[in-house]
Image (tube, rainbow, N blue to C red; front, top):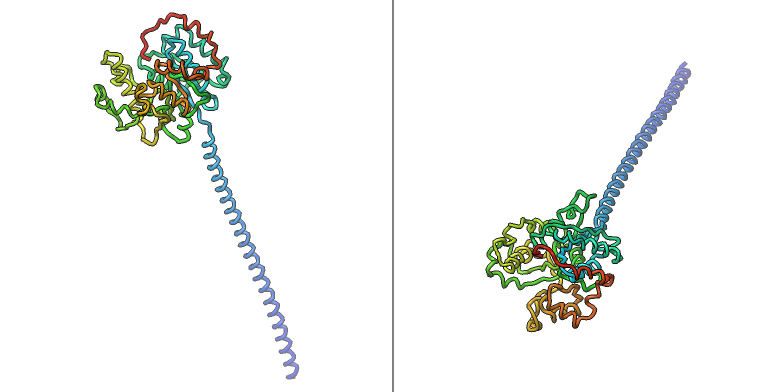
Length: 388
């Protein structure tokens, strides 16, 4: 009996043990599956996070590349320049000077718009329209440039013509002003004749050095006039010793904005010295206000002159004190420094150049047919007295 009981107890114990082992196996398998699922889920989440981070980094990289491209595009953006030349067509020499500038100073690689500005009385004669048409026909590069001719009342010297033109519309197809449509500006007049082909020094210096204003000539001689009869009339923005001459100047957009805001005033403004009756005194007074003080409107490191206007001591006994009144000094600049202009309003220079400086005049008038100027030479000059 006892043996049977022992066998029965042993069999039950064995069955319980087998069931317990089976339960353990099942439990371990369930835990393994859960663990595997958890690991897989974590792995999936990490991968998703990695993908997301990669996408964010890629997007940021694209944005940064886009910013760099935008900056590069801005740097590569073509700067548009306008060339303003004020003219008072009183003689064939003035027409010749104007032609020389169109031929040598207005390359389409540098200048996009040429603006010829003249007093209203000259419109009646019609010579300028013929002149511009001839120039566009004969000067090869002008076919790729926009040349516009504008007339205004000449009651404020050249500066008035520049002001009126800069603030005027380019043409009937543009509502914006010429000032708004361009980045850089050259302002000059027909008192200088170009003597050097493809000259763009004042514009290149303006852009390369990132300046507000450049000028062909700089002078310090105006210091002598600080205590003159008329100098007390002006309040300068700051004391600046350098005078940048107005014969050929260039401005960037900010520089031109400053220039226009300071000189574009009415004809009865004190800057134009209306109370002075003597023509020479009034002109000197205007030069003080509209030319000598202009460099002082800018920071000293934002302006630059390219050639000295003041005659050095070794040339002072051979002529005047400035380049346009001293033939020897002008000849030195022209022959050794590639000085690009001659002052046609200076009898001293013109007479000397005709006799000695061979090749000056034909250099920038190669496409000009002299017969075109015959009617101008023969015509009677009928116009109001000009202050040009």
